[in-house]
Structures are given as structure tokens and as C-alpha cells.
Image: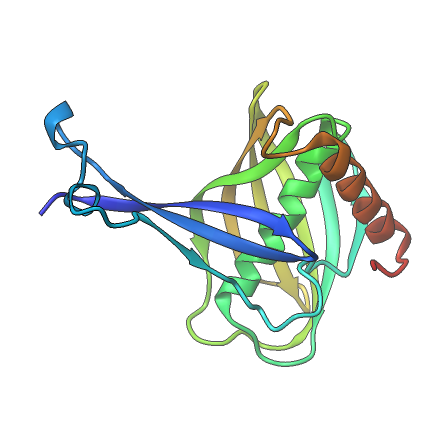
Length: 194
């Protein structure tokens, strides 16, 4: 059996985010690049709709500071929550910092989590202070140390790598640039995001 991986593609459609995962087989030679699924005429893509049961996909409650080398924010959780939501909070904070640094002129996305320390099981509710510090950057990649603290104790942290690409037909500048600028502004001012 050949090794395989899944490639995640997220699209914003009608107010909700849908993630499409493409099945990708890795092969050593050109002859094996056509998978058994394709040879049998099967579709190699499937769709997964991510339902966080949240009314909006922006998990951050507030961005309290954004500067050249750092960003801070807040998030309140009423109930115990999963590590996936913890990671998403930090990823959103870091991505908004990258967008801010490039003046929203390019599309930013999470490329890789180099390391992430999380406690096991559900995480405790409360008011979390989120922070990020820029560790390194190039023209197309940014590395951040991101962390969340509860009552001055680090609850989770990680090294996140973000990538930048030019807006194109998949990432439409006329929609996304204004969309991210508006959300960033609302998060800074504390106004409601509709």
C-alpha cells in the first residue's frame, strides 16, 4: 500500500467555512502517480463540513495590542473546551498579526505548527490572555511563538508557521482583504462582528 496524506483546502461559502480534503497518494515513480482509486474511476476528493457549533468562526474576543513584533488578545470560554479550539484561537491570533504586518495586502494562512504544548483532556473555562511574538520572518513566511494564559499561568503555547500568498482566483482580494480588515478593526475596537 502506498503512503498517503490529506491536503486541506478551506473555502468561505455563504457565511460558513467548509473544508475540503483531497486524498493525495505519494509515489516514487511516474507510473504509480495514478492511484488505484483513479484507475477504478473513483473520485479522489471528499468534503468534510466543519461544524464548531459556534455562531461565527472568529474565536477571538478582542485584539488588545498589535505592534511590529507582537500581538495580544483575549478569549473567554464559558465552558470546558477542546484542545482543537485552543489551537484555533492561537492560529487566528497569529494569522491576524501577519495580515496586519503586511497591511492586509496578501493572504495569510497557517502552514505548520512546529510545536504545541497542551494539557490533556478538556481545557478549563475562563478569561484567557493570548499573546504572540514574532520570532522570524521572510517575504512569504512568518514564525510566531503564541501562548494562552489563565490567571497568569501558561495553559498552552506553540511555535506556529504562517505563509503568505498573493490574492488570486481562489483567494479573492476584493472580498478577503476588506473582510479581514473589518474583522481586525472590530476585534481592536471591541465592536460586534456581524
